[in-house]
Image 1 (tube, one colour):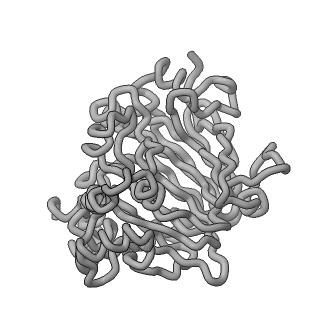
Image 2 (cartoon, helix red, strand yellow; image 1 turned 135 degrees about the horizontal axis):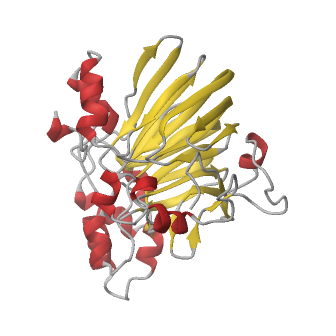
Length: 365
């Protein structure tokens, strides 16, 4: 097969009721339909029947699944293959929540298995790109919530009142671990990274399916899947490092994925050492990404996958550019050790996982 290079994919489109036309209006997307909502654009994914298709270079027309079969470790990386085999571990998308997102949770890996699902559980994270007046996120338990109060609220279809409310701002990130109940009244455009899973449990829908006379039992079953913890806060505390005229912001990190923001005023190299792939998403300006057998210029809303074996990849901003860099981390090697080397405290590092007992960084610090 051909030599590898930065791979761009055709978006997989989703027309859901919460969407609008924000993605098409805000981003430099190509060939999007103009006759329906664009709730989500799936940027990098490999699922049964839904595999991203390469749109650039000699490998154009191949699916990500075919590339994984053909290149294996050279594409995914040695650590990814060791953990996941040939399964692509992430689903990365842009999401337009112009309208409300219903009350919901996602199962963890064990719960997904018990449901007989092909999918893993679903921990996900949202990075805010655009926020309209009045937008809110309701996520995680409000202060003082008890299990008994939650059960009663589920019976009344009032789970929203049990959640902590946030007024999100552009540049903020929210790490929604599996089991975190969440809802939004809408008005947000964000980049979403998650485990490669499409399982959603709508709280009201789950309750509506209760057998007559067994509503309370159903509510208790659902309550047991929901994480409750005092002082829970899923908004991450980011760590910013200056690198010459450039800036690297560690946005969030858990065992499933990590996200960094690169604000570039001058060229910078990224080294792909064969351990793992990286997905880049441009969110401001334009940036030339060159590595292996090719180069691409990314503009806002455009993404590319950097195969694990590319070696040195050059990022060359056109004046200035901002990119999101997303990957599956080794938390010690990719997060803790480089930040400690820069003098970042354990408490600051911990903030990348949110304020919760679910934080994957906690046992490593």
